[in-house]
Length: 131
Image (cartoon, helix red, strand yellow):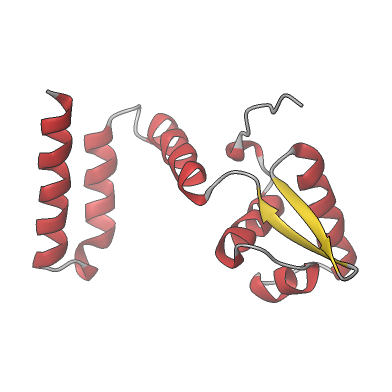
């Protein structure tokens, strides 16, 4: 079966909330998803949204002892990269320096010297790999 490209940015707000919970939990039942989200809808609504997400190809499930366990189709790393790429294109005009500047501005109060040193290492490594 040919798999279509999964486009996480096309999710509705509630769908995104549920997918994010599944990424945090790695694999979950409907009840566990309910417990993991703020202001959850009814059990039936979560079950219906999960069915929709399965149909759209974002998540998959397996049946274990008459319980459905849901998990994301896309690896967390791939999903993060996909969402960051979309964020970069839509909010920062494709400019990584602007995105990093915004991130540093938001995180400044929680960063220490070791965080800045780690960022510098990553930048140096990326620069070397680009040559």
